[in-house]
Image (tube, rainbow, N blue to C red; front, side, top):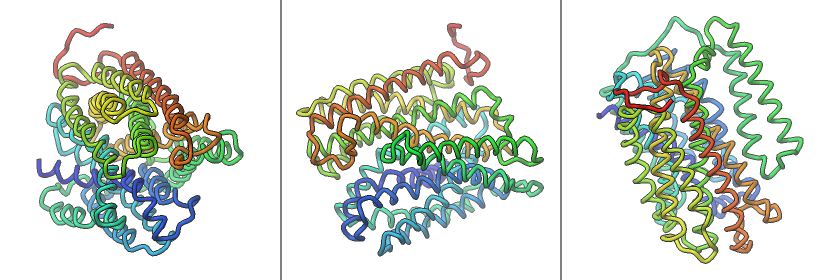
Length: 469
């Protein structure tokens, strides 16, 4: 249990920093004098570095030792967080955010690999992965709460400084609680594959994140996506030929792993998008403060953690297929409930019911996704598969949120929802409703995939209940 708490604390810190900056952006802009068009880089710089380097970080953990990679990543994350808090210019802040992303890409897959290899497959590992899933899925909601509270009480610098003592405790306790094994000194890092993977994933994420502003049919978007596709094709060709690949492509022939990757993209992309739109609705339509908005996300975050734990238990009883299908189906219902919000609505009637249903469903599905992805993974591959599933988490956010933002802004004359203070609340609400109905459709598709894509022997469980064929 101490080991799991330590690893989850570090992961929570990483996931928190994806969204914690959102509510602090106005304060950061005022103090550092950042141009509005450049403000997004306080978020994008972290996302690009984190998502782009996850495959490399996961494999490095396998080759050089998971504890070593984890501790180095946590220590570097603390230094980068301190640098972000002390930044006095836009360039210094963005550089610090890049350093945070690089550090997170090293520690996050190492931590998930440690969770997988430190607990034997079966009930113990499912409970551990359920706790991990709760942290991974709820970090976005808690980020809004923590960001609002710290910014109002102590200033925007506090959202970064809070990482330093947490990281110091983790680094101090790691040698006592984390086993030192897991190194494979006989293997070499695939530098050619790593270069192609980093360039391709960065191009993919950047192209998707910028698509709503640049235009989905623009030369920039199409060029970046074409570059990413060509780079990934070249990466696959290299990985087939090198003796020690960054990603063993045989893992992508495992049906459970591939389905889990697809569901991670759909599930995490949907839930983070809902958090974004609900935050816009609460602040721009209902006029709630950043702190109040953060507090309004708290009930859903708590439900998400509880259902992630329950999902791990149910996966052992019913099999992951049933849990995944039911969880994603509930996520779709939650999205539909939220899509009915009205311009003169309220938090209690228009937001809370849908948020609770969605969080319950995605929390349950998240634990089953991690359990499915890591089932049967050999110890020497744990970091690699951890890097893949964590990359899918980031690609899901990068893919789904820009697509839904484009749907939401289609009726606003191109105005961004995040800067929609002068836009009619009815127009914001209508655009948000359109986007959330599409999000519900994505969740329905994910539920069908979970129900239909697995064979009976693909589904990890302790008992064999009567399943329909």
